[in-house]
Length: 177
Image 1 (cartoon, helix red, strand yellow):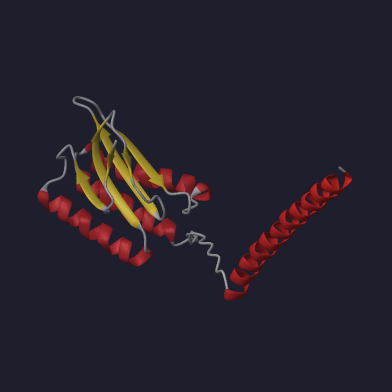
Image 2: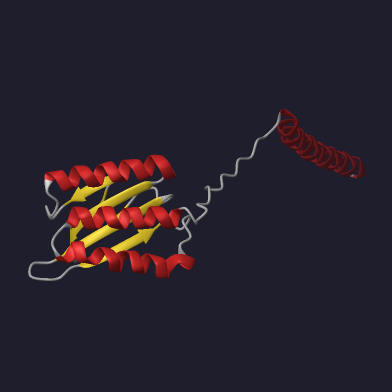
């Protein structure tokens, strides 16, 4: 498993030329700034995967390849980007860009896919992560400590009462002897 916390191009297989890499990184930066999300474009061996530490607002395009093989494309969206309704559109984008891939133009392919995804993202509402914060006020703190104090005094009172009853019983036994 390979993973990076920063977005961009991770060309493990060295399939991109320097010019292509720069063009793709520029496109990624443009989309990240526009959409406020993270995009990863990776070239990986067939058996390897890619993951991110914070999988929110993330798009991952993996181009996997083995020697003498056609390759495999994986396009993944984080859960907060709901693309289920647009799966046919995504497949169409991947198919339309396939010609560039078959010519070995990995950079052109990546840019075409990213541009297509950008068009789909116009139709999608990306959910903001839900953050639940609980604020304890001074009043709540007092209630908690007040409850603890009352419980302490009740227990302390019970112990004193039990000890006083035992003392009285002991005194009564001594008088009865």
